[in-house]
Length: 386
Image 1 (cartoon, one colour):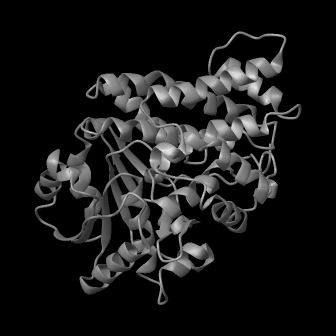
Image 2 (cartoon, rainbow, N blue to C red):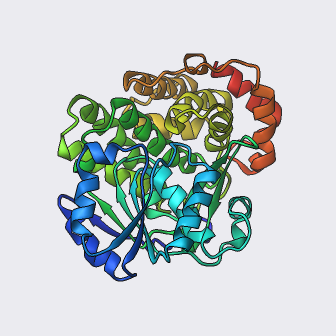
């Protein structure tokens, strides 16, 4: 196991009715609140009205319409609103996109240059406004970590940035707020959770036994409860387990002490940078193809662990056959959850694959990945996804 520093500073309020604590939480930071949210689903499910009811004594300014792949232009708008209204604290109500956007708004408030600088170079982030979240989608884990991913449509870039200052001070996780999600968002969110875990599970460090056991438990939780949530949207047990899985998948528990860079996320980031597709859908398409591409004598034993400990497959003499069965199960699971499992179904052809493959290796060091990949390797994986 590698050396690491684990720090998860976010205070979690988990369960039914935790929204009643919102006034107390925000009151620690001030009365002027920037409320950020996405396409308006919180108005349909009543959460918007509930926020205003609980915060009747606060001054609220809104940043609405945060995109599913949050754009730097929206971040800039949020920073302007904060400065114009002397905002004390940001309240992000929504999923990972809203929270990610809010994180960079919080950091950009104290930065004199353009906010895109903070996305390209996280060392420029030294301070941020306090951020509190109310989660409505189990997916990114942004409610309990210090990272954010922002898109720049002008340059076709989608990049991640991270800083301790951007971590939410508190997050309210009420599974009931996920009852009204469209099925594709539940499925794509689960794929995102699983991908976060798999990126850390398949890493070069082989001695982090405990982290891998935590990872296997989260993966099995997703496999068990996503189908239930799809069939029974108001099943509290299913929604609660998926929501907590989202937070634990990317708060450092699975990845601390394991060296190496991720692979599937950098590839998918280019897909959604160029085509603005749903992040979790792209990950579901890429992940099993990447698995098949890297399966070798060097990696097969890890895939056997994955087959036996995650998918409960019986051990067999032919390790490669067993590994392929696990990969088949992974791909079939995503398909059965309703995710379109090739890029063609999303309207993506081969015209930009070379450009995207080049961008992947420019933006991320894939030589330190579980299996090092070249630009040609990325192109081959993307071709497998068509």
